[in-house]
Image (cartoon, rainbow, N blue to C red; front, side):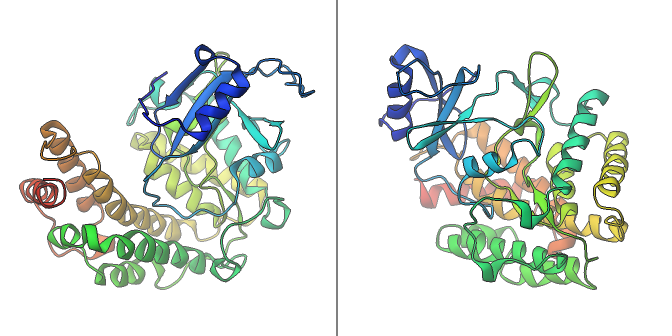
Length: 368
């Protein structure tokens, strides 16, 4: 289990120490981009709570200064997990200790640690992923008893898949691109991306419209690090913070984008998803051949705005440019630009040399 160092004593660490009873009984902070997390064995501290046989728990808090690139729908991940108990298989259980709900820590290895990007996933595990999709599609929006954080005006009406996708584009435009123009506008421009890119993106993915599907619960972040394989071969789904209600085909598009399945297995995933979707909501797969490619193109375009900003965060602090990371991030950014060239309407994709130079120049201006 990986960890990183934190000089300040966070609220999460203080709470973990209080519950575990000793510094040696906690592990962390665990490595993670969005949160600082600690895992501990819950000791008997006489508060009357029963763990129900569960021993390992975690508490966490958002990392200071972490950038958020994704729309969030629910006010509390723990509240959502509570609403999913008995409806979605193998999600972390909860324990209330005082006023703080604690998540069960799933002991095991992430799917990515066992089967990395580009590698096929064994059939038995793939079946579990497809079962999860079926359970999610069966969760209708009106049945989720968890408080929402998004404004009612920002929520698309049920079956308005075009409105749902336009909301995601608007979030990327306003909260990722425009909100960070002061720091990253010059870098985006050097890479050929500007405010007109979003108009081209809308024209590409929203015209002539999307099929109207019944909305359901989406995890919206189903990648290899959010699946945990336990010692007996069961696959657990973690990190529900980006879950939302919307077009279920978007969940599949996001999953395919993040998982990087080999081509032959990707075809099987799509076929399996269509089968479970039809069982959960008959008739809900109409129009998928037209809509899935456009949703995947949105994900490719979205990655440009998020990955460019993320690339700058790992280049090094102060004057010391980390040359290894600089090259690796340059390759990654150039690759995402190539993949997003059509949906963003890029006339020309910058070369690797041009991307590397742009990242280096940004680092000199903002870190040097």
